[in-house]
Length: 79
Image (cartoon, helix red, strand yellow):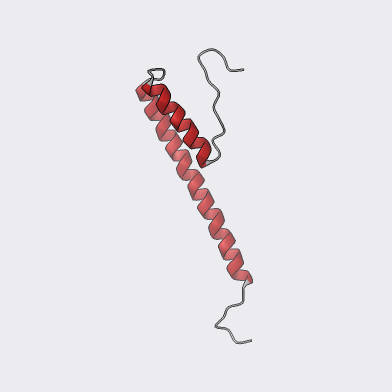
């Protein structure tokens, strides 16, 4: 259970999780429950996490494509 004044943070290992957390930060700032300067800092950190996850996903996809390309015969080579 979270201590008074703190809240539970969802998983931040996916774009969906980061989106939910960013929406929560925004909502709390709009309600006056979170200082807007703090919300801005948290939003920036969440944006960095988002870019890292996207970059990692792109890196994984590229590696899989390269592996698949290495397994396929090269059409220009004569057997």
